[in-house]
Image 1 (spheres, rainbow, N blue to C red):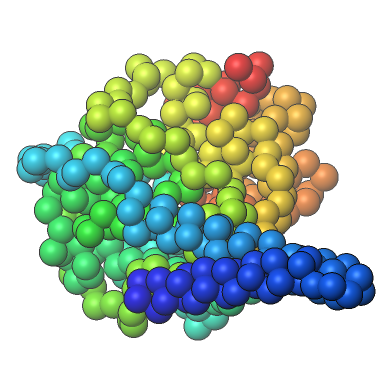
Image 2: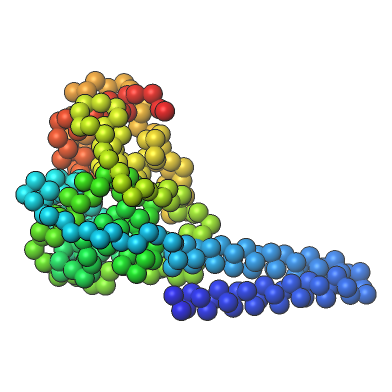
Length: 327
């Protein structure tokens, strides 16, 4: 935080200095100085002002997001909660927080010891580090209260109230209170696993400026204090909720209609046209085999292995949602 703040102040100073040079240039007696100096110094002022603005915006949203305080919460940790939490974690969290392999990427296997440095492995390490946390009691969450873990999921902020980069962009904020508490219960039940290295976000000023400019995509909207899941069933309404806890909407967009490319990720296709051509049986087969019609494999970025773990009813609800008109 100190280094990024210092860079921000230096940029402010440079912007003011460039603005002063612009003022001096336009007041010069020689016409060529007015034109060349005014344009050059003016352009420099605008560039540094833009970088300082978006950098400051990114720093403010990261360090002072204004999230609600952690609730006073103690999760009971019943067998039913733990079982539900295990199901949810194995559909979503494990995709990023599992133990990493030799290539530095998640293996989608236990333990949930984290360690995946997303920017470094995906080619945009120039923004700093975003290393997934160890979700077992061997990581930082051991020092969090149940309410603070709940707040991580609901508001995407850490124990100190600072924004968690990728978590703030994911749809976990839309999980019901019941399911969020189930995840807390399951994480508390895990055996402690040692972290392989440092974890957590450490964006540099470039990353903060890109975040402030919205170049990572729009963050999830603020969530209410109480969220209730729709009734379970093979319905489009519940299918949308399945797409939320299954992490589908985190990549394919809030309405599952695809997303445009950002500075750090490619465009994600709209799955609805393809699904509209499939029977439910064909959809099940595709999601559990990773093979699309025409014997085409899903791309590596598609975590179909997680979706394959869904129950038949949840997968059928997801199918119903993707077949339904977009509202």
